[in-house]
Image (cartoon, rainbow, N blue to C red; front, side):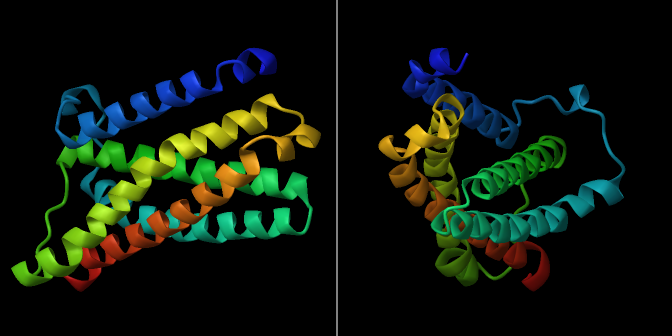
Length: 186
C-alpha cells in the first residue's frame, strides 16, 4: 500500500486538499443543509469556539514539541506528536464545520475601524495560511506514511515539513487572536 501511495503523492495531496477546501467552502457558504446534521443544544454550539481556541493552543504546544523532538533526533516522538497535532487540527476542523453549517459564520461585532484595520487583515492571513498549509501537511504526511523512516531525510519531508510547521503554528496562533477578537474583546 505504501508503494502505491508513494507513486501518487502529488495527486493524492491535490485530491485531499480539494476535498478539504470544498468542505470548508461548502459549510461557510451554507451549501451543507443544516437539516441533514443533528442539531446539538445551543450550549454545545456556544462551547465550540472556546473549545476550538483551546484545541489551537494545545496544537501549538504539540507541534512545537514535535519540532523539538526531531531536532533531538527522536523520530518516534516526533511522529507521534505531529500525528497528534494533525488529529487536533482535524478535531478543530470538524467542530468548526459543524458549527458553521448550523449557525453560519460569526460576524465581527466591534467597531468598524477595528474590523478593517485589525480583524479582517488577521482573519485573511489566518485563512490564507490555513489554505496554504493544507497541501503541505497532506504532502508531508503522505511522505511519512509511504517511506521508511531511514529514507525520509532524502525526500522533501524535512524541508517541506519545516515550512509547513511554521505556517501551521502562525495560523493556529492567529486563529486564537481571531477567537479573542470575536468572542472575548468584542
